[in-house]
Length: 177
Image 1 (cartoon, rainbow, N blue to C red):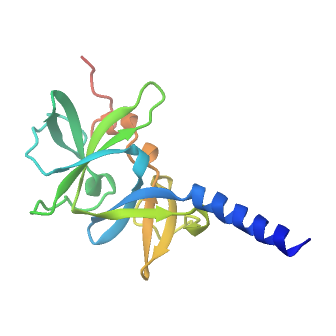
Image 2: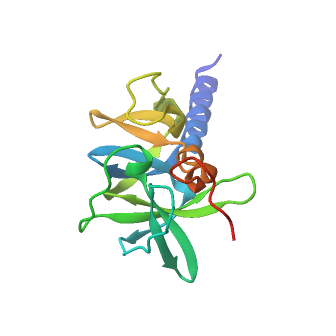
């Protein structure tokens, strides 16, 4: 193969790899870094007081009015079976669109702070370890090593599975209106 052909092939491969780079929104939750697929993030809003929902799953922090729509807010820390998120000046709500079989669901997730938008290529993603995770392994899409630490890329459709979130604390389903 000629030098020109090799150079062209390498340039095409680099361009293809660059196209596969995907954006993720990273955030902090109990001093750990997590990230969500940027395509599912609708917006980030300052923390606002929520209205509690009687008999809701314990990880449902409440609901907010977002431009006329009632949006459930999930305390992601409680969803991961950790301590309740402590509200402070950096606490925010990430509004996400969660893919569901019937129709996408708009939810808010309560996090300690939003960090940055990361560009991550598929080759940077590491497989999920079989053990040693602080959250359920089906909540994790992959792990990425950056700045001497691992960032957990969430599988949002599993971490925020509406059917599980709609279940009451005792495992029964809430009645729909």
